[in-house]
Length: 222
Image 1 (cartoon, rainbow, N blue to C red):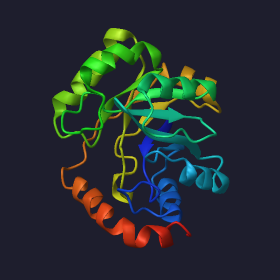
Image 2: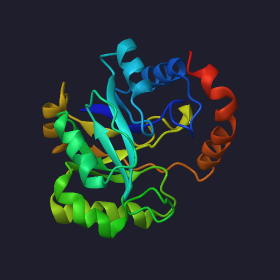
Image 3: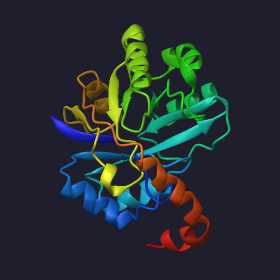
């Protein structure tokens, strides 16, 4: 089984300061076989990393819709934020991508779709993040797992890493795959790992938001 990180951010997200070079070095050091780069509302960093490490990187995006966030995997064109959730899922499908709900029940995040909306759209997505290492309340991950089981959707774990230290904390065991179709098949045999990150990792995201307006432009050149 491969060790696959399915939820990770770089400095192309406004709440992370992880450079592309350091990101790649950390992924290799931690023995990750595939890593989905899911920056907020952009695939620019993911595309740059894919050029550097095509054997490692999955191009993804965490997209903020009107109803909450959705994850896209194996896309080639950036999907803008602010669209209706169902339209965003349609756009992922048009590219042959894979759509998933991240942290759907997380009551501490305004970006989560929430249980009611998750139940309404779950037939339209391919998978559910049943364990997010940044969830503050364990019951919220349990809620996501119950949703996936009730609707027969594959469940996976994600570190939701915004720092190098978090990368790979909640990886998912998957059989080897090469493309979106193979990824979908592999998800049916997913083995999520469940290791929470401490609450203080959220402080680094707050810190990054403060620094990004001043240093983000220069950092993106690296």
